[in-house]
Image (tube, rainbow, N blue to C red; front, side, top):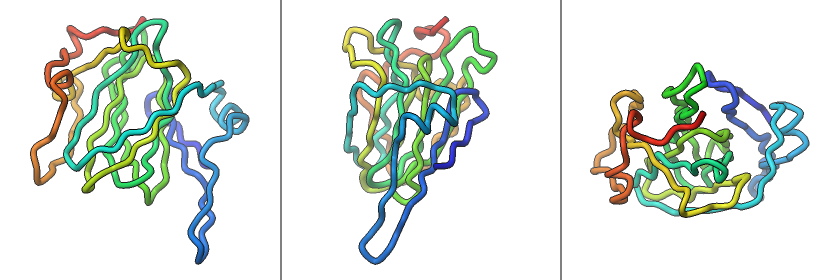
Length: 183
């Protein structure tokens, strides 16, 4: 696998080696020992989640607060998404900055997002199946969000020929100055 640290330290794009032939393909998508060797991060997966969303669905920007914070490794099983991670760590020199990566079934990329980040994605294809590996169990009482449209974040969401579809919770999420942040 190829490990590419992004401009925000601790955020990694992982590109697997894909073996293809007339039958299809095979690839390793995660090896804890190799991940630790290349990144220095001990990522212990305790839960894996999956979602399916239609074109124009924007999920995020979400995170878990406090002791329920989660590091994530995300990938697309089918379709294409515009994936965004925003640094919410007040003590970080990159506080409020973001990383954008296109994840697709074609490029097989994964994005590792450490604790202290908000995460979201926009579906660019007729649908997308999305997978999340996390290092802490989901706790509904610890949900947090930052508004995807916050101009201070500077995220350039792509144009789509349809209107974005958001949950009511995501539409009403606070902008960064009013949102929960990490130390």
